[in-house]
Amino acid sequence: MRHLLTIEGMSREELEDFLDLADEFLEVLDRPIPKVPTLRGATVATMFFEPSTRTRLSFERAARALSADVLTFAPATSSVTKGESLKDTALTLRAMGADLMVVRHSATGAAHRVAQWVDVPVVNAGDGAHQHPTQAILDSLTLRRHFGKLDGLHVGIVGDIRHSRVARSGLQAFSTLGARVTLIAPPTLLPLDMTGWPVEVAHDFDDVLADLDVVYLLRIQQERGGATGFTSLPEYVRRFGLDDARFARLRPEAVVMHPGPMNRGVEISPHVADSSRTLILDQVRNGVAARMAVLFRLLASPGEGT
Amino acid sequence: MTATSAVVMDADDVRRAIHRLAHEIIERHHGADRVVLVGIHTRGVPLAEAIAAAIGEFEGVAVPVGELDIGLYRDDLSRRRATSLARTSLPVDITDRPVVLVDDVLFTGRTIRAALDALSDLGRAERIELAVMVDRGHRQLPIRPDYVGKNIPTSLDQRVVVSVAGVDGEWGVFVRDGEEP
Image (cartoon, rainbow over all chains, first blue to last red; front, side):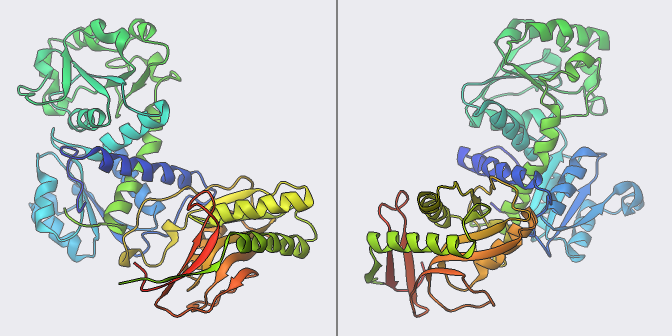
């Protein structure tokens, strides 16, 4: 594997390889000195053209735990405001010595384009509403560590599926690893075309609630127009929010996940957010190890092919 | 390439060598109460377990056995394809305890260099010693073993293979002609 651009088309073996590596990196992060010299001398550039704190910090933490150096590109303080293009930014960072580029952009396909322009591995850290592969890997890791395996799990992804790259990459990873995925949303928050998606669809949260092992909540993406998918926020909360009453009806072993940042009182009640059955902080912790696995695989052992 | 294979140690030879290594470790440490054995993946781990079992038999103490994967500490990652990582785990804190690293074959010394780096990130051992089943020479670093099952002079185009009971079938040491695959 040369780049990590999408979960689509990835085999179960490739996904499990990342999860197996990440398991070992979690052990590294638990050590008194949570750092290994593996990528000493390599430089990882993070290019985030969209605001993001946790994903960028997680990648940078992962790079530093492997002893790589980090080049941080922040558009707010950069020449993007002077009109520099994505291509020129990528070529500039490459010329400065970046050995791998982590790209987030609001346009679908941005990371693919960067991968055509530079001769180093590119990791897609989110392109528009398209893909967010490392989120899918860390979520799969979180589920595998909690349940032992994903085979047979029933995962309900709830909310603004239409604008969610987390949902697109997540559902592909979960189903490749053997889980059953149900998308739970009003028709207005579902993609227009879901041909070939390995999912079931439910428009009524309460219909499937008691059958779920995992409730994966999404944020309403107001910046991508998600708030136009329903009449009012209270209406959304009433129909699709995980409130205390719905939480009480979940199976006792069911867990709650959220990619963050979460809106307490909207898709998740404050009580649920703080419950011991939410894996939200596990997701954050596992994210660092998952990204270490990706950086390691792409920089230390590229292997053959693309 | 047609590889010829010569048996240098059979199962009984290896078993006797394991017993001798165990006795040498006990002797040097005046018992084995504080010693920690750490096997290097893959074949150092069952070897360390076998030595620990022998020490337990002779001294009646349970010696903790850790396992170490040095994949993240290699100095040649850019030159070879890293495969998957194996588990690294120490059953006890090694700080202020004597550690005996265990590996099957000592060759260039680069694996041991990586293992020393890895161990020092995991704690500050009182001292670190090295036990190997075979020392085949050709060191590229100033590293020497403290306990040796057998010295086997080899040429660079030969391979030394230690087969391990439980992993490969029976204990044994073989020398094969032909390059490393």
